[in-house]
Image (cartoon, rainbow, N blue to C red; front, side, top):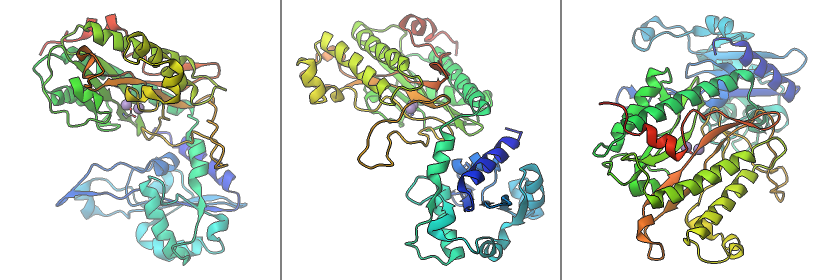
Length: 440
Ligand code: GLY
Ligand code: MN
Ligand code: MN
């Protein structure tokens, strides 16, 4: 997003919500990989959401009240550092380009922060991201706040994540358009990988084709470690070794998504390595595909978050009973959750700046109330049922090692849904048409 007014508007919205409070948010730090080499830097998602400012070592203060203002502290200009690490905005340019009211060098933060925070009280009106959430920003902010506010480490600041998570759950037009592009790139990369698949290659070679397609399309990073899992590896849900040889007769499960302007796509497709489903593979595939389609139908405003999951379970139970892979009554299967031997994960998660994005799934304000929340226009989630059959003596051998997941990214619209990743084929005939068709 080259237009920074959207970030400014988010800060204004947040300032409105915190009234006369003050919010403090840091970006993450760089992290060392080994001597003199860092991991590629990626901004903390909350910090990015509010600023678009791409440098590490930056902190913002959003000061509420009658005259709300936003302040950024960032690295000072340093010509000798820029020789090695490239351009540094410095406070002056950061203020102008990223639309802050005030900007200072980070070296001055210990001097200025206590003054900015004067008069605010930790549990009354100082908002930050608590350290118990998975955010690098949370850890850095809390550590610094203890110092600046002289609060003891036990002191509990107001929880900013409750407000920010709710905001991030509803995607703006700009966010939807970026996520559509992210899904398009990922879908096209999956099609390319299907075309390059043939027996005898290593899983990591297919991973390489996907990552190359991401980069060629302008998405420099994957949104998470790509899963390229052939045969029984597909039954390990987060398999990332990707170092087995592809064998004719096996399936290949690819779970890969890219990150575009910090927004994730998350797509899974499963298809036969030699281009033709065997009969047992086709049977299981069709069950998962039906489950996924029925689940997607349940994504619409007003429906509960668990409705897609329930629809998927229903289809998977029916299919497995028909195939006699589950041999007791439906009631017993549901009561004892026997389907979990084959389908042991949830069907959906929120998707956004983080692949497993923020946002609540239950009305957890009251601890005892676990009613799932309802879908609303502009939510984005994945729908990803699966079926994984490990070798076991009560299962006919022809089904052993079949691991199938089908995953799409779905936007809730005002009257239903829109599948952002629909460019990636998933019908059996469409898959069989593209596997292995690209030359070396
Ligand atoms: N790629 C991780 C997931 O599908 O949730
Ligand atoms: Mn996935
Ligand atoms: Mn997912």
